[in-house]
Structure formats: C-alpha cells, structure tokens
Image (cartoon, rainbow, N blue to C red; front, side, top):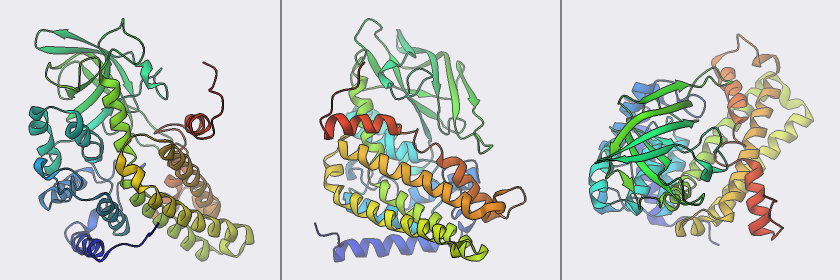
Length: 390
C-alpha cells in the first residue's frame, strides 16, 4: 500500500504542528513532556488546564461526528495529530479516558439524551472519567465481574469492587461493568453503567506502584447510586458495549504512542553517547535493533489502519499489542543497562525519568490484555490452534 500522505493531509499536519508548537513553547511550556505513563501525578492541575485549552481550540474529539461537536476527522488525520502531539512533547492527557473510551462509546451505543449530557463536557475538557472494568477475580477474564447493580425505583444501587482504576482520584464519573442479572449466563446479565464519583458509597484507595506513585486505585462501591437512565445500551446487554469500548482503546493513538517511544529511545541513545556505553558493541547493537523495531512497528500500524477504520477488536489488534508491549519492556531494560550506576539514587532528572521508564514498562505486558491472552487469541484465531482447555 502507499504509505505516503496526501497534500491535504500534510496541510492538516502543518496546522496541527504550528498550533502545538505555539502553545507548548509558550503559555504551556511547563507541562511539555510531563505526565506520561507512570507520571500521571505530575502537574495535574496544569495539565487539566491544558486539556481545556485543547477543548477550546477543537482538538478534542477529532474523529467524533460533527453533529456531536467533533471535527469528523478521518482516521489518517487523527493519526497525524497524535504523531504531532508526541513529536511536540504534548503532556499526558488527563481526559484520555473520556475522549478515547467513553465518548466514542456514547456516540455509537448511547441514547440521544446521553450524548447531549455527557459529550459536551468531554469536548470542553471539564469533566474527567475513569474506567471500572477489572476486579480482583476479573482481569483478563472480564466476563467474571461480580460487582452488582440492583434497581431501586429510578436508580441503580451498586455494591462491589474495581481495581486498577486509573485516575479515579481525579475523575468526576466512572463507567462500570456490573452484573444486573445473576441468573444469566456469564457473558449475559452485565450492564454498562455511568456513575458519578462524588457521592457517599464510593471509596477510593490508592495503589502504590513500584514507581512510588499511585496512578492506579481500588474503587469500592457500597450503596453508590446512579440514575436509571444511565445505562448505555440495553440492560443486561453491556458485554457488547464493553467490547466496543475495548475496540476504541486500540485506535488511532497507537501511532502517537510510537512517537513517544521514539522520544524515549532518543533519550536513551543520548545518555549512551554521553557516558560512553555506546562504544560497547552489544549496547550499540541493542540501540540499532530498537530503532529498526520502531520502524517496523510504524509500518505495521500504517498498513493495518484500514482494519482499525472498520472497527472492532481483531486478531491484528492482538498482534500489535503483543508487539509494542514486548518492545517497550525491552526498551526499559535497555535504559537501565545504559544508565548503569546512573540508575541509582542521586541521578539527574533525565536519568530518573529513564528509571521510571524501566519500572513502568514492566506492566506493559500485563495491562490492556496480558501477553499470554494475546498469544491465545493469535494462536486460536490466526494460526487455528486448538483452544486452551477450560
């Protein structure tokens, strides 16, 4: 396929680059490159202000239909923006769960009233969301959720626990997979509920990570309530909606993610040159291999864009998740090896960030679908191997 961009697409790129450069070298220079994975605690209020600046200028919801406040941008244009965002050092997005997951879900599965209520605050960057999927006994086996919701007049009442709830301590709302029919088969009887966070009956307990920070949380529901109309899709039909949300999670932002990886590799390479480790032929070969892998990853992502455009969680998305997760974990290991003694206490800020890269990237092969689960999908759906015994 032709991997070049058209003149119109390059003009869109130039507009995005000019705007990002203007803002991130000016008023918002302080947040440039801050608050990425493993560092979501950094400058949160300032990054929330940045989120609202994106909203004011129409850079949130690029791919959403114009009828709901988006730009109706093509998938390629969205990819271009995410690439330029990473290239410019755009900070970690505090509204990514709302824009990337909940918003598209409401557009595709929600009612008109839900679209009118929940989409505008996401587009303005004023209302933040978190995701209530995983539980202690329902991670990769998501259909095993035990959090329950029972109807009480005009409300749903929730009891149960979620875990690994990213950014819950800052979120205004959470979308929750809850069992609303305990007599139904495993993948049935689950509903997709929108629940306000600021209420009695919700407790958030931070999980201290190996990095020393707490982007993740445990979230407990003990009589928390939400309005009866805050069900997305059909009651007891939430599994289909939940799978739709997962499909949106692996969309256009993946190429921007790779540009962020490239920035990290550049930092590792700079340190290797400065401390002399680049003269080691083994280190030099590992740096070259990382550069080559990033090029392969980019071309693979570009050639699978038509599949992403059709939507859905496919075997290709599993291949891509397995690919980038393994690469990024290896990049973290390379960073630690290049730093050597620089990885110990007292290192400068750049070295500390590379240490956090090493620590955070240990989780890449677990969250978003573990490597073992991705291999099962590839083995069964791509290679036609026998299904794993249940």
